[in-house]
Amino acid sequence: GDTILQVAHRHDIELEGACEGVCACSTCHCILSDKLYELLEEDGKEASEDEEDMLDMAFGLEENSRLGCQII
Ligand code: FES
Image (cartoon, rainbow, N blue to C red; front, side, top):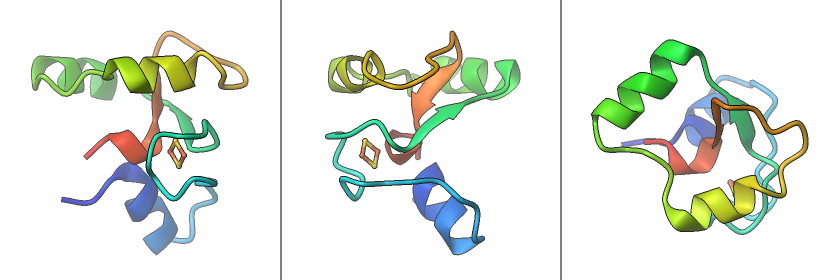
């Protein structure tokens, strides 16, 4: 499947992805709706430890923050 980052780029939605999706930056930071965030958790697609570490460096971190390149 495609990541949110790839889908955004295909639709000309501005979302940075400085590290090209390898979880080494936090420029693809997205704040999800409650609904999507919960759906991902239910599907066992919660953030990995690596993603959490990068998220800690993201600007404007919120409860529903995820990295767009890590959501498939
Ligand atoms: Fe770098 Fe997502 S594009 S962490």
